[in-house]
Figure 1: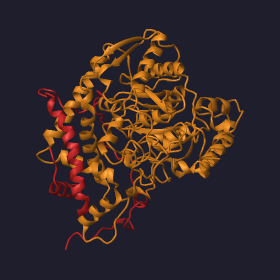
Figure 2: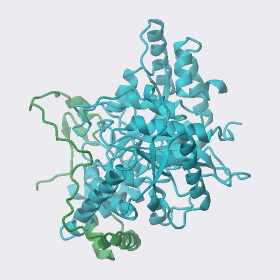
Figure 3: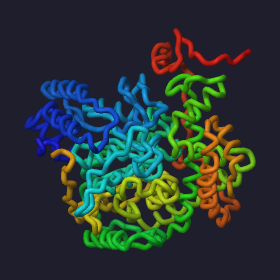
Figure 4: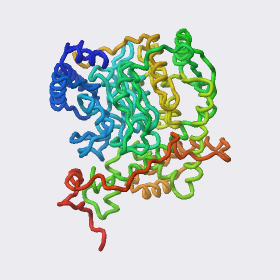
Length: 493
Length: 95
């Protein structure tokens, strides 16, 4: 059983195609692993029964010779993707009982390719957070623990349920969404791969909106090859999302081959930040050496506006969030407060009771920066900074093909360690947020262990719509790092 | 930029968010911390820099103004917290 669930997506796909295992066997193994792993709280909704039905249907198709790209492969879905007939909460009380009558395009693409849904994974409420501690459905616990310690750690966020599920072998792969680092940061602190594609690569239709100009769906997987396989199916141009881009989706898996000889790898000097532990910078240097040893050319580049990225993000993202979340008013769907005086009271109380503290904070920030008299000072200025940040990348990419940076300023931290100061939590995204502001693709690859035995990731950043080169560079890091560690399964004794 | 309790009350009203009286003061403190931090954007000369309107260079798509979906009244009502027949029920709006 444990052999089945520890397979990579590519291995499981090949085993199913070779008829060595059935989808039902594989799915059954995951369903029972998920039940045993409830202490991790990785899932908001388990869909075991439905998963087995989907597996049986896949097995029938396989027997009939109709084999999709992901035929019979069990996946976990972040509970931000609407799934028809299966509760979709965004980890918020305000959507606690919401059952979508439609399917998101990304998940529809996965089911059309034959994949099996195991359930909906936990996240920070409306994807706002970096530790999965703002969920209305409780914290997710990182499967990893520090050396000689049994202290519970956070799995990163906002895609913390997905990162925990992949790291704990509760699925072959998972979907995540990334607005400021929400795929890459949780993947890094759980020792797995997380890919945020270029803005527009995957459709946002049916993904609960946080900040529409930054949100992008992507895969969270055990290996770079698995990320390539997942992205191929997740990505599509979609009439239901006018920002999805009509550029052919290449066969990323095939394009992985060929090595990185002659690839120019940029090292942005502004990413050497005060207060970041020495082991993070040491790992970064090692990463550059790995790539150099495989024939890449290392070049120093400058992204001068890097330090303005986080404050820019904390104007742009809340502004968009306050607009997007205006729809939750207790009338057409979602939570409705009881005992109200009038319609305004209904709105205010439904929203006051339905949204958690971090979401309320961001709605207030967003409302303020968009309000009369402050719009120019905050929002317009931030949108200009965004232009400058994107320009930095364009200039850097004249000298290089990909950029190499750390993913996070440190390994996973303890539950509750950073919840008292919002600013300290926001700094988790210092290396990842620039990529969203510039709309670029970024990937985190597990690269080593910290001094206390916790996984650390390296991030690669690519040119817009050049995920193929990005993945090839990521494969080179993965090969050199040879990261074979997995957490001890302390939750299922 | 520092934010006081009255400002929090005002923006909460604009956001249609019931923030309890006891939360106004702490929220003012948290927001002040965040606004003081974003103040650093003022160091940058943004004279002549265009505001970003689209992160990926693309033309907005056009489509024919055709009806492509509809007659979904039942599906629309399944999540309504106060729904009767095909109506969303709310407190009395007109006296």
